[in-house]
Image 1 (cartoon, rainbow, N blue to C red):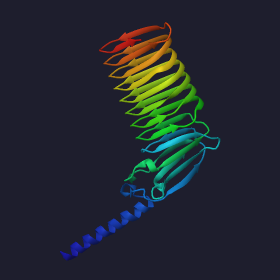
Image 2 (image 1 turned 60 degrees about the horizontal axis):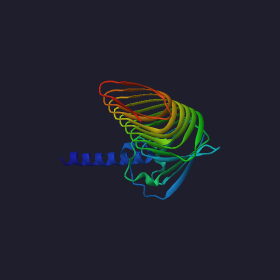
Image 3 (image 1 turned 180 degrees about the vertical axis):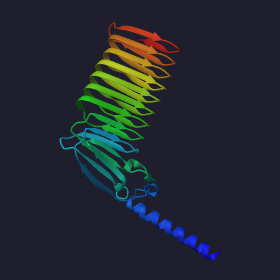
Length: 267
């Protein structure tokens, strides 16, 4: 019995040692627990990119620059667990899989210096603030899983997509806008466009009454709500407790299609 107990004790010690060693090397990140007590360090990742994605609750700022790079300021004991991946120009900033942070992420500062990009995404409680106004031919802005993006954009074509409590807020200027909000996603925009297409569902919300559009084609369902300012013509389809509000500028032509408990207001 004593030999058996000694054997089990030795095995447990050996396993614990293996876990500690592999955690330090980053091979067993599921067991890595970090507290962020080290001094703030700086790490620079140079490289060109065309799309930006941030996740894992990280907060980042995007600034215009001719020299593209990512600069990460973080406590020394967690710096190596912040992953800055650049795969064929697709930039993704996140924590390595399995990293267990026991700290507030407020002491982690990520600055993204970009010349231009055509896609930006925030997910898993990440937050991106675009400090400078960017002008593109086409831009895709996506938020999901409580991710937030704030910033102003100008483009010919603009796609906005917020879902699962994600949110985008900013001033836009575009010829064509396609906006979708679902599963409590939220889009709050001001600005101007020529042609606006919007869809909301599952308590998604698009607040765009300060967006002046000439043409609007919008649909709301499943408790989704959308509001837009229109000057020429609009088509609205509301169903399943979905609600649409058209704010008129001048005397636009508005076609209403209501069914199954949907509602449309014209103000």
